[in-house]
Length: 151
Image 1 (cartoon, rainbow, N blue to C red):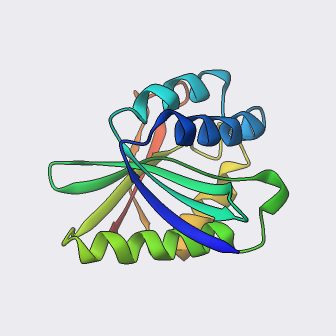
Image 2 (tube, one colour):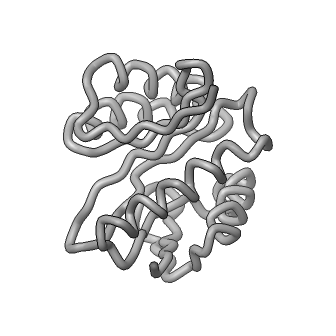
């Protein structure tokens, strides 16, 4: 059974579940610091999770700043990538954000020239209506790409 849950300031159980999924993605997608940083971030941000039979298989960590929804981190269980779960989560996330009256979603991601796997990330977000709006050389090691989607 698939279910979607929105957690406002998630409790320690949800934080632990998402942190475990981040651990599975560390190395291929995330650096070692991402899990620790995300655990702190979730104390002040919201999380939307896609669960299958009660287990978190995909998540989006997000917040609002200056009237724009900002995705901090998104991930899908490596064993479930390529099955459309991330797309389902993103579509439901966008629908939810629109019902709240927001007009834009933004995110920062890693440039593919820094880590080639992020070509897939940019492709994923592009398929979901995001466009590259800026490139920053001074943010993070290797820079960052900002993507936005107008709603």
